[in-house]
Length: 182
Image (tube, rainbow, N blue to C red; front, side, top):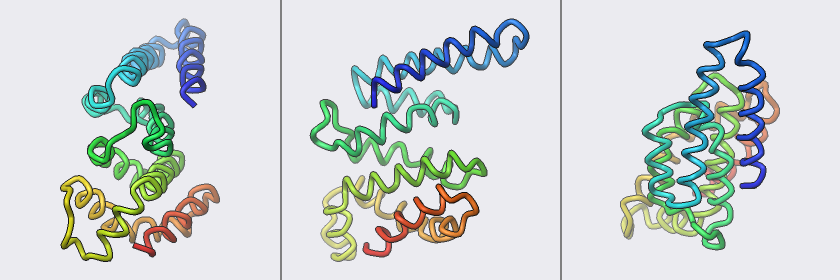
């Protein structure tokens, strides 16, 4: 997955070069995006906290969309990853996930649903225990925050189950089934 991401950055660079001559404004945006992605890739391999800080500071949906697969891959690998994504890092990324979940662009909505599914699967045991204990024995503010964010967005996920985009509807149904079990 990380190799594919590297290739997509290089493909973006090639596209940037091809477009640059006739369209300077588009070229400038793509060049900024490429610069941000290169910085993100460097931080990705060094320090997850700095990576997350960078993505949040850049506050660019296109860059966030580009790095979602990287994060999802690490969330899914869990502790098997060389640099696991902590629950705190996931919780910090949730404002972007929620913004994408409520976006008009189907690809943004879909990737946010995939992220939510990945978070539910990765932290299922802790989230499930918390839901059954009704938050009484919560040991972690990050877990409680993540849980509350997830359960307060059930209606949005439910609405997405009826999306005209099959990919979004299918993913929303998967997430909804998981949320119903909490």
